[in-house]
Length: 366
Image 1 (cartoon, rainbow, N blue to C red):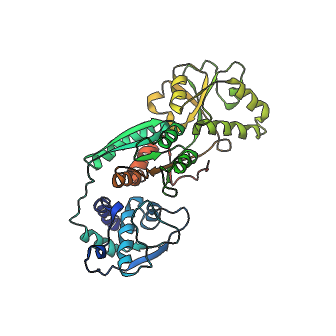
Image 2: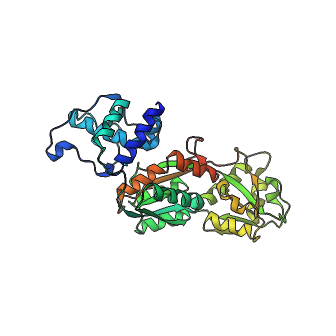
Image 3: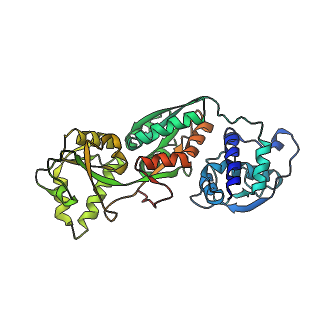
């Protein structure tokens, strides 16, 4: 899409996002139906589709999904072959959507010109994996600037702890997990509606050691050195599970083998509740080595830890899903945040903190 059209879409996104969770067609209010502008293309929803993904594909901007939302609902008033979307997070396979033309985008902008670009005030509670702490803190501040009156409060912890808290009924509005397994736990608990989650970023593993490097580590094989004290995250924590997957892959690699895996397992001295505890303990010299995400080795700790890269063949590309909570007190604002996290601005922040932007890699599906 041309730059001028993208500017139009940017304006529409700001104007439409306030009401997209409770859209009501004009005919339901007793008003005569209006003739919707023709679609540039009709699209049938496929498995694993979501509106922002479709917007990214056809419009070049994931945040432009409210345009498809509004265009499809306008088409529905004239032709019920098109879907009536009542919740932007809930679209079904087989639904017919309207992909708007640039002219229709201009029409939508005119029709919504009196709408407020601001979200209603809200205090969003976001449950986010510990590895997202630095990046999400900055993104949350940027979101508050973009939407005055909306404040963001974070609960950072291991994904398994967050999923457990959600299962126990803890109030929240958005959940960002470090793997699909814990998102599935939240779905099974009824706190997230299946199909509304979407991958927003990726990560990979790296080995870290104290900056003074008492064990003189310089290659992965050194993890099997006798008397080395290795610290990992607990096996129920995503990064802990990925760490063991690394050892399994190494055992199958002729360059390492089963003896390497067995000796490394013997060197583990503790399993920690989240990745930040592993990082802190290694930075303080309480262990000789640990395995964390690449994104954890931030500039703030660059003078406290060194790191050894794990090659792709032995690594895991971890997929991070995000979803609005089904019983959120602020569904519109929660939807706005999940859309914002896919924006170029938020993706740039994540990349700066060492994450892999969602369009740059294919993820495993743990």
